[in-house]
Image 1: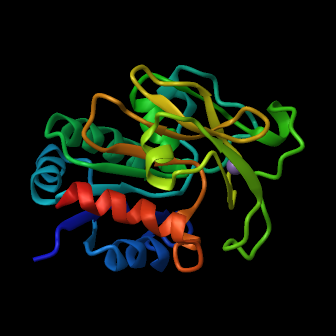
Image 2: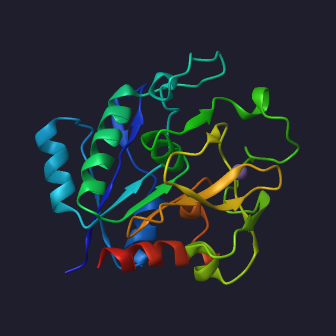
Length: 233
Ligand code: MN
């Protein structure tokens, strides 16, 4: 049996519906896992059952986190938020970490993990961060948008065996101050944190870019899903 991977659902406010981009599921499938989209429920029993049942967890992209979660006033530039997802994800992450199960975060996922560990976010890159780097590229999303520098002596450096790479980029928020216990693995040329891990956890990795759009054409991005699945087996 392939390991079950709990995938945090995307939420469509207009349709009041959960949904999923196929890339997240295909990335897991092709790396040897069986993805399961979790319900948007933050009930204690549901969260505990999800944490018990699945072998690993993919925290996906999506809405902005409510700034109150990192102790900030909401700036006008904050986009749509989804409090139900915030509750589910913060509750689930706590239970998953208590069980030392693997976690992989993408885009909103890195931001959620950072906030869960007490970090803060930049609420809007265009209005608050002086940078020339394109972090909100136009489609297609399977093309590179900017360079990243990979820190030596990190799991990402060991996996890719290189010091630089090109990634896509589709985010208007990012890590401002790093959560306690998290360590950076990669930076954009403007100093933005693009990847983190938790050295005390077996596998807790997160990236600000979108490997789910890249893994078919970029072997490095495929390796991210494979490393995650290896930890889940
Ligand atoms: Mn970026």
